Length: 316
Image 1 (spheres, rainbow, N blue to C red):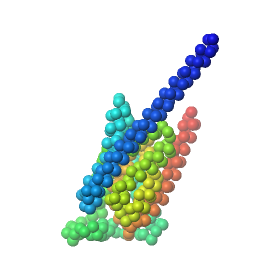
Image 2: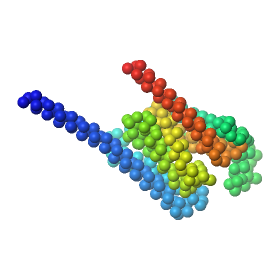
Image 3: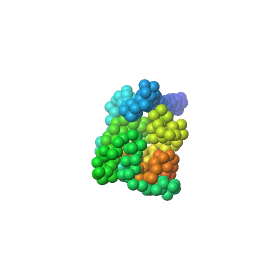
Image 4: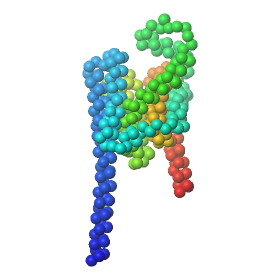
């Protein structure tokens, strides 16, 4: 009789452990579902609503609609953190503010990706390196601006300062507290225990799909190829995502992911002005050259992760 009771107790203990494990799994699943539903409802609702009200017809309307869309992941992350993460909200959002070298690396990686995409574009296409200042004035003129009143100043240093310093700083803070608070903040914390690559690829694919209204309704990134842009930007985001995850992991904070994302947004648009033509599909980081560079970056991340695993195994 005693052995039978012992066996029965062990079986109950295993059943309890299994239920607890299943509860934790469901808890993460449910949190993920709530976060994603809120993110898409807020972001797509604002984007579609802004488009329906004619926001796509004016630069200010488009900016307001797209900025509102950017807040969706942050709103969802904050709601979920306050609802589900009592006592660990800062940690759940990834907002630990302890700068390390990976904050700087995030900035340098972003600049390197943009610069490399221009170089690869020149190597693989008929594009050549052009005059940045002349190209800038040409783009402004095509946008309907009167360039005859532009002062005769060396615009290149001014443009570079704005992009590399001011633009990167502003965008980094902005994106940390909007998109990245959701993707590399709250969602990363939920999914990261499932593994580096699973987290990176799943987050990247969803992140890409999330951009669909911005691209299709507002022409974001691909104004002349909207339907195609929706599809290929999912690939683009999936390729960039392992780099983002690596930076997020090594920095231990969503701030570094915001720096990487913000610097890319600030520098990519300026970097393509060095090209003799900025038309798709050879439009810098968003074009074929960019996809090649990001694919190479994924291989580099793979090698870094494999090296880290070998080091951990050797240390053990």
